[in-house]
Image (cartoon, rainbow, N blue to C red; front, side, top):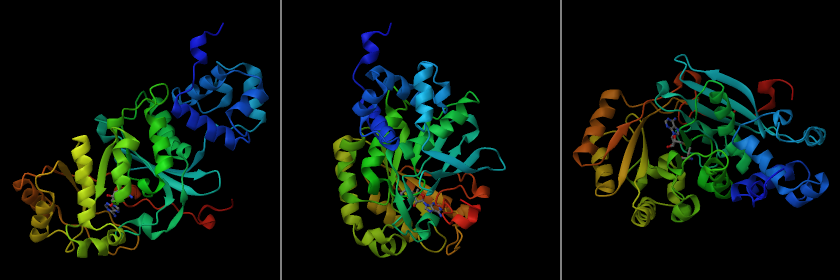
Amino acid sequence: MVSAATDSAPTSAQSIWLEEKLRRAGFGDVDAFLRAYGVRTYRTNQLYRAVTRELVDDVEAISVLPHEIRQRLVEDGFELESLWPVVLQRSGDGQTTKGLFRLGDGAEVEAVLMEHYGERTTVCISSQAGCAYQCAFCATGQGGFTRNLEAIEIFDQARYFARELKSRGKKITNIVFMGQGEPLANADAVMGAVALLTDPHGFALGHRHITISTVGLVPEIDRFAERYGQVNLAISLHAPTDVQRSVLMPVNRRYPLEALIAATDRYIARTRRKVFIEYVMLAGVNDNEETARALAALLRGRLYHVNLIPYNQTPDASFAGTAEGRIRSFQKILESHHIPTTVRVPMGRDIAAACGQLQAETQPKAHGSR
Ligand code: SAH
């Protein structure tokens, strides 16, 4: 017998998952599915749990469901996956795996697994196919914008790598929204994905193990704490003056530094939580001592942690990366102003899987027939 407890109301993450899934499978809503299959809510609970917690990838393998239900789901073309790997590449050191995934409509996105020699496992996921923000140094922006991803399509990138890790007795410890796209420009779906990633009845990752990185969309930063709870916020800053930042990041013309820093201050005042500042080091552009001092002046006295990111070469090769010695002296200047600063270790450069190098090939000819 099934106890009453297993027929309890679904979590909101579960509702998001079921609604998207069942709509994709051609049902109007969850009730329509329950009626059509003549089953009670606990069956959808079991389905959700199998997919998001046990990471099952095949309907036939969901052994808690009676054979007839499984068979019918298969006949109805019910898909557990929303994306499929087209290419998987592993870096020479074996620590980084890049996946190119195809979505149901043929759009493609990339996601990257970084294993950090066993110390932690981070998955970098995409929130949009392409990106509309056109940052001068980023490969994704160079390819233009294709479309927003749905919550399940974002979540399934993490699910894919979680399953792969599980087969090796490992787990995801961190998720970063630093793949393709601007997460805060697709806020509803990203919120849904965060709900799925953190659902204690499902995927069960802690909020504090998730980081959302943004070009600096001020109204969304103001809503951040209320929308995403304890998720970490990272701001892609890259320059301490409007003149410089508007050249590197056109979005700065809409949300200049003063407004961006003010929004970030409001967020810190409200949450008492540290904000991460991303700063890509571009030789001869934003890496001299004067710029370091200007950055220190901008950030001083606030709860910020700066990540200096070595620039990764993109196909158009319009920038060069700052040499390591200069990155270190830039870091020293910030630290002398009491600004905590780390230099990010680049991962997966040999397979173009590093920050800013993700640029899914969306041209059909690149992958043969479709
Ligand atoms: N749109 C979001 C998230 C995606 S990019 C954002 O901009 O924050 C994740 C980080 O990689 C950002 O800080 C971005 O500026 C940085 N990045 C982009 N291109 C890069 C490159 N070629 N080398 C190093 N970092 C890069």
